[in-house]
Length: 612
Image 1 (cartoon, rainbow, N blue to C red):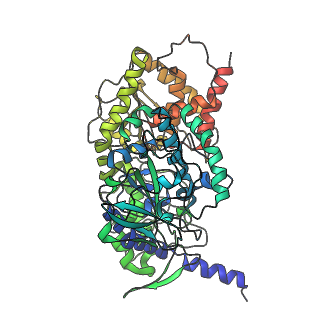
Image 2: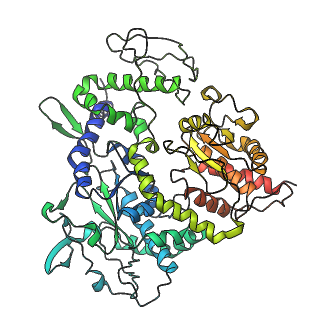
Image 3: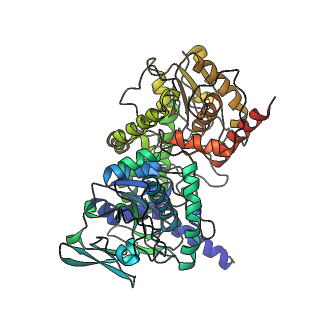
């Protein structure tokens, strides 16, 4: 007889099936996220990695605010995840909408309840000091006259009234305001609000504890070397978070115009309902269990499916029902893996779990030990799904990456003026000491995911983009390739190309550190002759960023002047690495190096500075 605990686990596993998760995500988008995006179509729609990336088929960009930075007693402002591109995009668009979800039974994840509000407060105070606005504080009563209308949450007892053309309208304060005791609005510009805005469900004790740390974070932000002067030029109104969930009441005939607000809204949308357990739902065809925050922890349920693959085949997956869902997902994932393997991209083989047979669709064939070009040989048994006779039917598919979407390209186009101004202002400030190395050619406009790092002559990209760029000899002179040798497709660059099989810090905690000396030596030889250098890895976000960091710190000084071979070794500190990462991120907003990789960069630089 089975124990009650085993039965309970079986029921829970059945309720949290793959079909229920995908159907819940599709339900949240079609019934909620899409409607919110249509209310403010002029605002940029951003996904907070990684969970938020599942909740819409197309985003204007991504951001990375971690919930751990907002956990009670562990509040933090990360100098390595500044997300300044979000502030620039909000300044250009007049605001932005950030999508995320949680499955912990809470209405909002901590990333929205505290991490992002802390981020907006720190940026506002740093910009206020930059503007040199010093005056007495505005009272809390004056702050409540800010014009916010058209939105109301259902469970708040506090509300503030706002006048708009002689009409009195009510906004529930849990949607956008708080009772913060510290209001740092300056009289010279009463619209520049520097107060810490937290939702009502955050206790006063926690608010006060966070408030005590804000000034320390402002000092840390200022010391990071972020280019605040450019942000101050484009951001005309202070940033301010608003919270919207599925229980938020919005009067459709009175949807507020964001341009009428005296702040730049950061609308935080929690995609799912706040449920502690799955809820049974049904439609004319199927019955299924709704899972709150179904996209959270995708490694435990997605079975290799990515957000891009899901939305490309969403109709097929949803309409196929729970019986065919697992087979359809396995087929889609394997077809995409084969597509990438045939093109030399990172495509690890699917391993078959012992004792669990993978279902094979009708007409599919099973191969054992088949090795595709560029794939890694594991020796394990796996299943390939074939549809067209003995050959693979390959769709026009590629690995999911926000940089490859048309929406993200549009974001770069519209925000390009802002990015250009940022680098131009920095170059004018540094004058003759600015980095003199520059690339001989610019990449073709149709190549997305390629990022020049200022005028250093260094560039970063992912593997797919990097291999495409290397086919054009007019783009870059030299290449550092940080991927598995079996995935390499570069063969005609001679000594202008170096291949470094660097593994992620999850698999090898010293692989990056061991290969950095060769990367830095290669880069120094090429930079001395003013040659441009491209560094790329599988995703262009972690390993290639860290290699570029090591080269920037080793070959350039803090003013951007190239260092010769006879330069005296410098004493490198962690703050130097942070400042260099902030500089790099101003040109490559998708740079997200892991903590383990950054630690290896610092250890390499520290050992280098201590060596005789």
